[in-house]
Length: 421
Image (cartoon, rainbow, N blue to C red):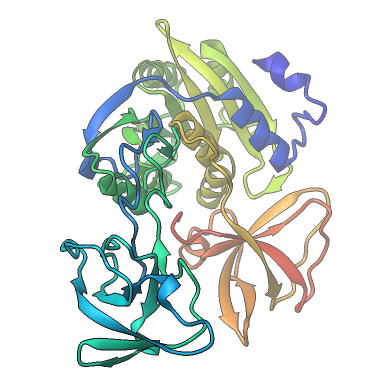
């Protein structure tokens, strides 16, 4: 694995660009194996293991796209109105029982199958009904307001590809095909633990110099949003034997191990050596702020192995590195065909920002619409330990390595976080 990275033209363990680091990780991982067959109601948030093939035409028959009158276009006068005899009504689920002949029309509702002979629907708002007749104005087109059988999907054609993440719309589409059970990839198993003598779990007393462990809770929330199985191994002290035991346990029961803390230079160096002892792990200094130190690789235990993300210890840095590196990799491991990145757009920055060139910075921002345009401002103090800045943010303000200071009124790139955080 290391050769795969070190041969890359842009590989620089002392200042790896964000985009390069993300792509290197995505190139390294592949979807896990294992398939489950689930009832449709239990498949939300899962990933399709195989393509869904439509067993039927959708729509199943030619039908009306709106409420109106069904008729034969050949009966209409091209240069003036036409009066036709109304012979009945067609409803969705209760089709008209006979063919429509010359000079005839039927009242038809949205979704109702077209009776034999009907090739055109005229919306009810433009006609003039009187007793059992209806007058149609000139200017109608053959085939208007008609949905053809198979127009959406044809029987035997792919409805959804393998690797599709199932959202509410996908569940509805599958249900519309009459399919009640589908094949999905098994859930990704992710083990998490925090490291550090100064970190204490909730439910205990934090003495001087100690901090409550928030990172496992943000990681739990972010991972739960992805639909993975989270295995929480708690807080592990800065002790070689304890760390080795936790790494071995995590690697034997999970597909991925995510830790926070212990990857900075001079900070618990034996944590780094322990990772190397158990597998092949690369330590990077990413050209970014926050979240400069990060480890990625693979560790093994008793013949089993797991991918490893060693994230920084600062709470905001944990979230930033998770979203930029771990999240897309986890989606790919889960089987999502094209994980993608958080959606980006340009917005006018309403505050000035000081920035040095050479690294990518992710500032927490508040995106809002005003006077018909997108605007963004920072959430205030941007220290990597200020988790409140994430609670007030709905986006990252992304300032690339070539970007210098930002003046109020300048356009900047933002990554939308709503739905992720």
